[in-house]
Image (cartoon, rainbow, N blue to C red):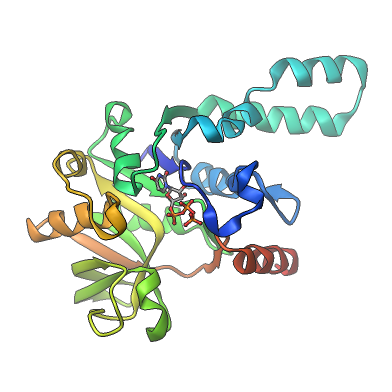
Length: 271
Ligand code: UTP
């Protein structure tokens, strides 16, 4: 049963500077709704009951967004505004399911994941990267279905341009299970064009096993001096743990760059 999700939010967001020098990118509105709420709605619809946010002191405004009770209560007392009431109820619903842990130094996604170790209860959990929005189809929900069927780890997969492979984690795929799912033989973090085993990239939705924490505890920094989650996954695959790449049906939107962020607004407005 996948009932818990984790969301790393402690990165610096340098691609969205200067905005991110004062603002958490995950609260930026995408067609009028903060990006993080799309991610939370995806979790709720996929049956997730608890979400762990990995934030930092610099990104405390993300926690503040969900902890404005007295502000809302005073406002609602003064103004009988049904919209404010509705927004507060929505925030309360989110707040109830969120726990916070801190990663004050952005040492990499793997280090961020490690901060959640004490809170993870079951053998598998979901991880969502908030820069990656997937619309039109609930990617987490279909990945949970794949997990339930094959009892394995699952990662979202997308075909990207060969010339862009160095921006992504790239799969070496093995046996085809069916039209949408393949076994993963290897995954390489940001390879050069020559070294890329394919042009199938890891997108920010993962169903990971709890045993990844043991790998992360002993992991040395990789590319760029960061502790990457991809390196821990690569090591688990080498130990014969089953990982499936899932070709999701929804539309992928990259909100982590300015161009991608603007495009996401347009795409969601059109949809
Ligand atoms: P990225 O490295 O892709 O994004 O991290 P970033 O750091 O937020 O932004 P740029 O690249 O500087 O523009 C992917 C996800 O992992 C989180 C980020 O917040 C993002 O959601 N992350 C990254 C952490 O939580 N901790 C880290 O040490 C690194």
